[in-house]
Amino acid sequence: MSSEVQTIGRGRGVPKSKQLPARRISRGRPGVHIVQFPSEMNKRVIPVEGRLEADMCLLFEFDPSIQSYRSQPLTVTLADEHGFFNHTPDFEVTPFEGDPYIVEVKPSARANQPFRAHRLQVAREHFLGNDREYLLETELSIRIEPKITILRNLYGRARAVPLDDIAALLALLPKDGTPVSLLTIASHLPNNLGRIGRGVLSGWIDVELTKPIGPNWLVWRKPR
Image 1 (tube, helix red, strand yellow):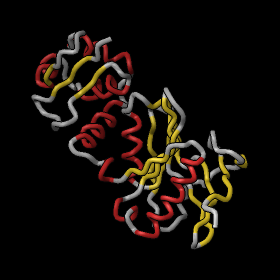
Image 2 (image 1 turned 45 degrees about the vertical axis):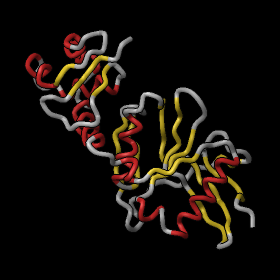
Image 3 (image 1 turned 90 degrees about the vertical axis):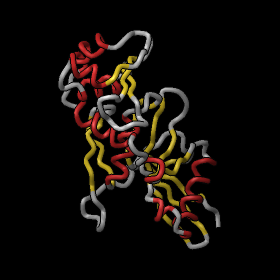
């Protein structure tokens, strides 16, 4: 039986698509915890299924190569030796350069179950056959410490800081990109993590992601 039957949804670049809405995320589905992720990049709330998907959104937000992303972008109806099944990927990501690609998020324990792993492979082959990259992300690639904790901290604080408020922070950071410790920044500018987060989101600042936030944590201005 062919692995590709038809595609329905709103995704770009998928041939023979019927322009119908993809599956809506519903609070009524058993066992599904809905998270309303407040996306700075998309200027709207993105509903996602579970905190792992919310952490994936966080990585998207801080990725300078990404222009936008959306959840539940389309549904494909596929088939394998077990019969027909619907597959709705978790995200479609649009980069500044290149074509949009698909990201599926699964806990590693579920992704490695033989039946589920097989169907994920069928879905991957479908999208690759239609020139769409298909990435599978698990907690092993999403929840890398201390990076994910740092980004959660910065994002939560940055949302309350307007872009204009990073001017004082930028004045403390050398234009050549020389790193400055958080201790030094704090001696001149209290309540600084929100400004640092806003600076990272806006592409002006970079930070150390391999060491937890502390007095010797490094922040630097991106050379322009």
